[in-house]
Image (tube, rainbow, N blue to C red; front, side, top):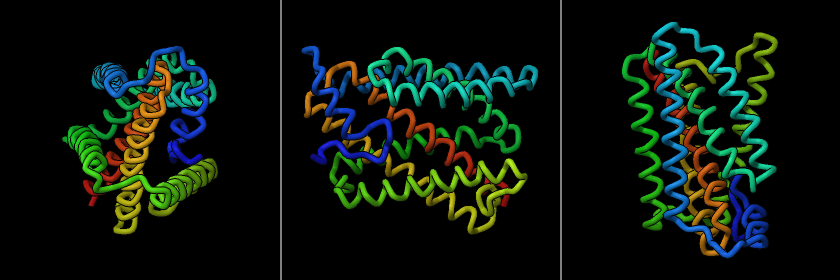
Length: 246
């Protein structure tokens, strides 16, 4: 059945199908998921504020960039394959991502005044807009819509993997970092795809609640939304930096 399809690798059909088989009597709720998402966001902001402060005290944020990026990646992989560990590892993931985001944001802020506040505002504004579009049925997560976003997201992932591979040979992927018209259009497309991931995540969470997923999966759903929001914020930050360099 295609009830819980999603392009987000941490929020997919098999996740909730398996969850429904291990119910412990308490079901996933929207309020519970929202509360856990708010808690994870608070942890992200607290960690980000700390590394931001470190940058402006001594500028040595390389360890936070490395630990945050690598630690967050490892924790995300573990949570994806060990979904029942999400209540314990999702907060640790939030702290790692917060440390990384605080460090990378401080670097951008040192070059472009006001860019971080703009990126934060646009990220949450996009989140609210996507939620409204979903709730009022303006954008529906149809099977065709899901297939398009899945394909687009996979293409972006491959693009970034190739770019990472080329950097080992000191070759920069064309248009990824430059502020040319094509570079800006590319960033706009990626931001749009990241934003549309939210529509699929909202749909999946709603169906998970309707399908009776266990309460522990509120942590996993909140983690999945956080993954999308982090990606969206980073892409908006990249786009704003390109616009500021023009």
